[in-house]
Image (tube, rainbow, N blue to C red; front, side):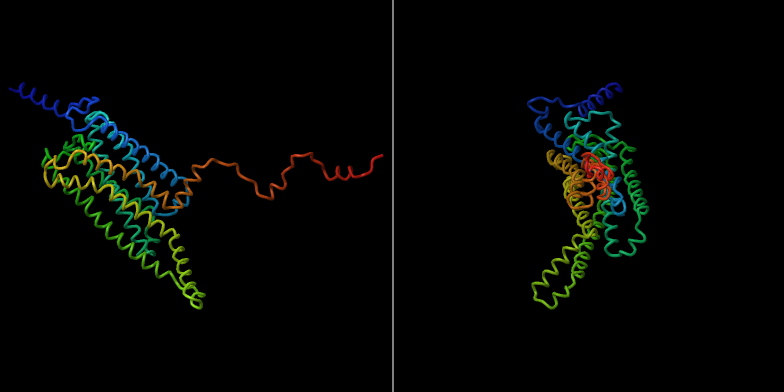
Length: 377
């Protein structure tokens, strides 16, 4: 009896975990063709490569530029870049390999690690967005307190707490062995359909790590936009000549003042961070919505497989797009990257030194010139 039960269990495991054979006609179950699998593999690999290059450039630029290090908020930008780089290296790369093989190609413990790193990076990214929003909110509403209290040491401590929270939530599925490879999501994820107690964990994690930070981000950024608009209008003072001249001169002075406000470092940082946060939510929303639908219906088939795969691809894009936002919207990052990437030129001597350099022609002293001018006998 025991031997029969062991054989049945072994057969069941082989059925659920055996790799599907890849043929030119398609996959064995006919739900995903070879071309679709290969195209998805290439897409994930390209996104991972772009994310690795972009986020590495952001980190190196920050480490080599003193001016960027002087701005406190850039520490959170680098922390987010490190998180995105970890996602590209340890989450996207194994996912691309699994897509190509249509199974988890590595050892079982690596699947647990893949799930933990994926959840850790998502949680840390979300909480870092909340820290960025809080730091900008304090800079806009309480600039004096921000200058005196908000230091790099303070932000480093807060970021360490965020990482600790992410580690706690990422380790729980590994301890209770809730992880399995989801073929359509192309990631190792929590199997709450098999383990009912895992559903409680997922709900708590969703509320603590996503819902509460999302509400905080929405409130703080709405306040930042409102205060920035009000302060921008308040700074637009009438030009002295505009009071005496016609309305056209006044309008020109107002436009000039608005251009000055928009070029300030504070405005540039606020604008770039708002775009980063918006892009993060846009690309992470499909992944979150598919999870919510499956949790609400408790049916794994309630979301079609291609939709799950598309949601995973959108989540990956969120980790690769941030460097483009920084370099497009922030002149300080563009200038630092250009100084780092352009070829080195030999230093030019000052004009006074260049005048003292010897000429390429024959060198004659003042005495020789005087002698040459004398008549010859």
